Image 1 (cartoon, rainbow, N blue to C red):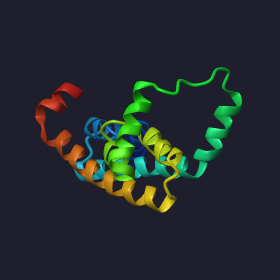
Image 2: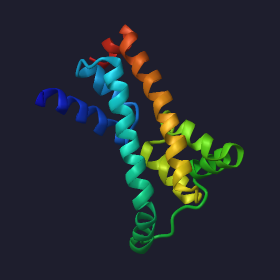
Image 3: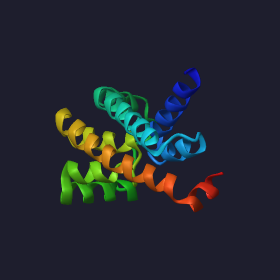
Image 4: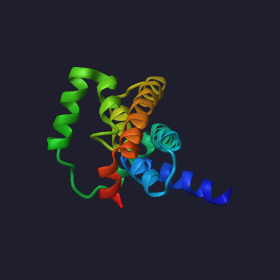
Length: 149
């Protein structure tokens, strides 16, 4: 029982930092694709929860301790603003698992002053969709499994 719980926690923790880490970890730990998907979803939503409620404080802390002014127009910032202008929170949420990290995608939503309920709704839908899709692909494509191992 303790071993399976540790596997679930490992997959969830891998998904908190980079969403693709969860499905890869699930394949390595020999979990089913559904277990992998659910743990990956839980990991991403844990990041979303933490960053949503602590995001403003993190911004203030970084601003206070930053030595140099951050670049205003980096490639990533330009891309994020372009996505925001075209698609809003839906675009940010849909692109968070494959393009951004769960932490960065949520931080973008917080920075754009999206209401928390909208952040949770769209990030949850995105995590569910991408979680099941990526986990299924990672478990069913044998060449991916060989590449991982």
